[in-house]
Image (cartoon, rainbow, N blue to C red):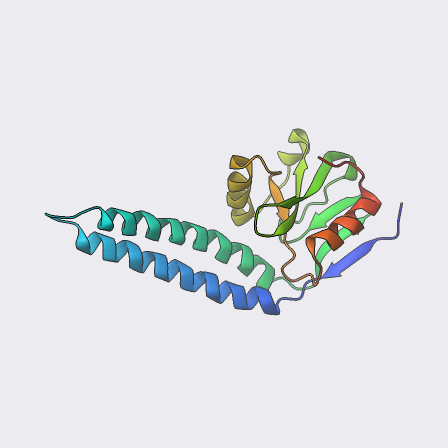
Length: 173
């Protein structure tokens, strides 16, 4: 087993993104409110589009604000790769045994991310933070692995994180 790898959290960009995502929440609510204000006789569908788009922006913004906030307020290690398992403290405080983890680097059309699944029995015992669970629902809807290891605050790319992870866990999806 390789020597443990500890990746410290660097929260500057997470703090900046927390503010930007919170602004998106406000913008989404503004679009939705503007759409509600346009409802009435002679409405051509623009109001409904504004409401739907505004609510979508708000939902995504709330989830991403939560994810960024989790990284922004974290002190100490963000990721720990230990002989006993993997822990990303922005996802859960629980160490996930290597034998119960499968992973891959995913390209979603815009960027790469490191994503992983956990065996069902172990997944039930993890206390995954709410924003990561919400992102997991989104990931599953596109047939991606459930949990995402953020590059935010690590100073590493998804490929670099994958290379480090490969030293510990060869179980790829």
